[in-house]
Length: 518
Image 1 (spheres, rainbow, N blue to C red):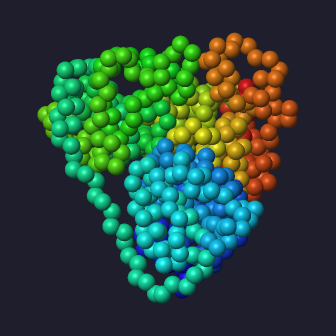
Image 2 (image 1 turned 180 degrees about the vertical axis):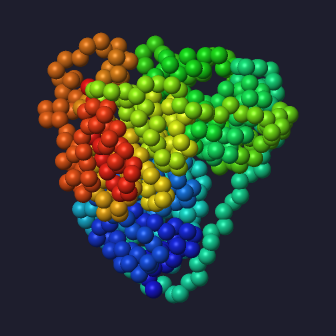
Image 3 (image 1 turned 135 degrees about the horizontal axis):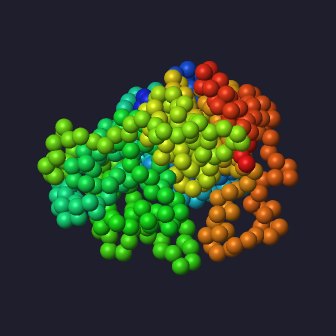
């Protein structure tokens, strides 16, 4: 038995049963050990950003970590963008980064790098294995750290620690620190603030407070004490659909967000952070709440959010039988026809969404209406990129499909963002994952056109246009998908799109629709 075998045993003992991987030479002993562990599912990504993004999607749907396997500093660096998204989502993740044998490092071979410094900004915990005898405590510490906010743990595994012989060891479950008891002082303070601001209190729910059972309690508080419910600008995971309480998502544009929060005197955070502008803009504030708004934390991520909501409900004297305002049937709206538009796609997907589907939304500026319409769709889970780093959508959908193989996954994907991690389609094909990818083909970085206006640029010239548009040549997503082994077709009318969506939803396996927008 060597150190790599022991590492696998620690992971499996703690129900880490999936490893998303893009290995290199330094990790070959760990690859060999994985080969001896049939209970571990190994999933290859052709780019490290696919690996870390898939681990993020997997974690969001399971509430437990997957492992990733990355090759030295450059391999880790390729995965950092989606580690950033995962960290912002509080996703548990255990990154195993191979390195040179410890005695080889002084030679400064070409792949030698400062892995600790690369990992630190995107990791909650970084640890280097000192030798094969250090594997068990290091792996246990990484697992524990992955389940401690903000959740991303990175363990550096030198090659000699992986191949070093280890005496037989007994591994077991890592003991985790339980969530702290509900802070009743915070509960009483929040309740008092709500009573003093009838109709002018708001609550942002996140994490398990945004799951169906947490939303039910938040809905009782909303109805019983006239508290408005919100979701964050970027939603890590929220359970949506008919029969569920439907918080309002705070808009991305600063002016729109401030308008939504304008009448809020007390803002209560439940697993969430205070909303702020995504960027600084000339003449606009960074904080989205108005001056004088009292911002209070009922409970933070890592606390028992469900229990905190129950305690607040009880403190306010609201009965568990209190009725909630639930999303009902779709609004009466004509079926769109003719040239395909963003709104037509949003409406069609929301209407046809299968029960218990998972929606991974990286459409960015496209499908703006989908979130609001999703309140009337069949019950489902909704996820977005949370760190602003684009390229998370295809990998996130890949990880979600591995986590929940019996559920249909719908990936709403912008064409510019999708090109960052298009390799994830190959993993979907290889693993036969039930993912429908809808690419909003507007042939531009539309969000950046909007940002130019936000900073006061009224019209752009040829140099700027060439940096913001994706034409000449236009991307051919059907060919790209087929080259990755995923069946695909193109739609440029509402009628064609609806026919392709019906076909994709009626069968299993990956399918991509290139939705050409006008």
